[in-house]
Length: 258
Figure 1 (cartoon, rainbow, N blue to C red):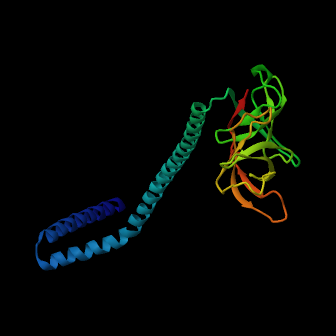
Figure 2: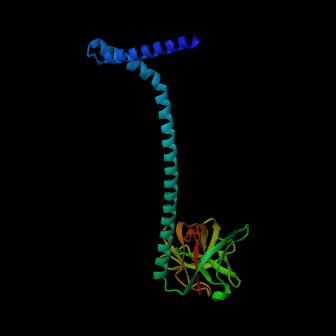
Figure 3: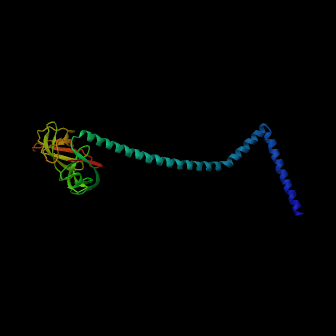
């Protein structure tokens, strides 16, 4: 009895659904203004209910796209950094090649393997030594000017005393008159010229070269550039401040003159 009643209910429900379906089809097939207005209202209600789902889906899509874009930005950043490094290295090698073409001196190229910046002295280590015929008191340069001299030689490495060492001295000539003087480092990349007569003419921007008087340094190696001069009335020599030309803080390769 119960089963037959349930089957009747199911049949009635199915008939109702079919009737509603055909009613909706017939209703929406009508092209009257009232039907269009009803369609519009129904679609508006559906859109309101569907909006949160659509918004959430868009958020997920934007998040996924943002993740992809972040990966692309990282890749491009790393690539850009690599290109900048290659550009700097290329410029450095061009300077070295240009120096090699212009220099008539006999020299060896060495890699800087270690810096040792102490309180009383400054030095660096290069990767050539006795096996490459190096000895003590050989001039060391970069492509811009004098860096120092060798002070200790091992079989495969050497120690270089930098031009910024407080104990460093080198005889120089400066200006159009090629006046003699002594270069002394003071602080950082700066130094002074001692013994330049007050009557000598020196101008800002003049390049200071090795004099060639010393047995260690050949003549005409660039040492520094004049930054300022000052002539004091009660002193026989003028005060000359210079800036070292060599790249003391950016050393990869150096040249040792034999």
